[in-house]
Amino acid sequence: MSEHAIEVILNGRPVRARVESRRTLGDFLRRDAGQTGTHLACEHGVCGACTVIVDGEAVRSCLMLAVQADGRKVTTVEGLEASDGSLHRVQQAMQDAYALQCGYCTPGVVMTLAAALEANPKPTEPDLMEALSGHLCRCTGYQGMMKVAKRLAGGGE
Ligand code: FES
Ligand code: FES
Image (tube, rainbow, N blue to C red; front, top):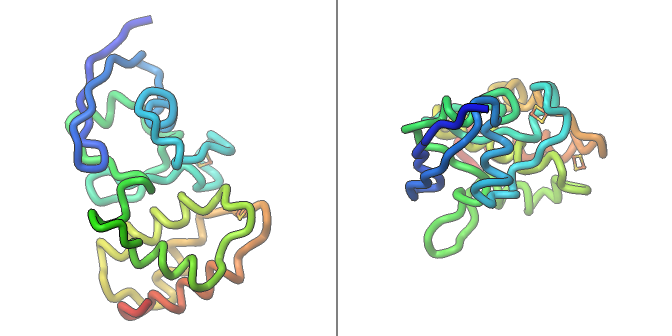
């Protein structure tokens, strides 16, 4: 199996690695880079649990190869909080709305909302609901996610 040298700017720091051609970004993040906050569930691009931000866009890391992330900026849920340890406003809104149960789907949901806010700091509630529409929650915690969308709409918290 051929290997490739890659360098990814991961949560603001360069990470160099050698990866097999077929290594997914999700496996690279969890197994090689130790960023286990990114969760893998369906591994078929269906559930959204593995979502991370690549160059500002929400990406399903089970569908992207690690080699495709070479030279790009990747943010995982570990990279969202500020340097003083304060939560990102999406994380704060999730906490305030008690919008998680087992939490397995939560990092992906948080990253999708964070990417949506990065693209548009004042989204409407329907904008955020649409962004969330690609996420599955086995605990059926959709009411909590809807509350978060409501809190974040228009730039609120
Ligand atoms: S694990 Fe990637 S979309 Fe489900
Ligand atoms: S909170 Fe359990 S899968 Fe969503």
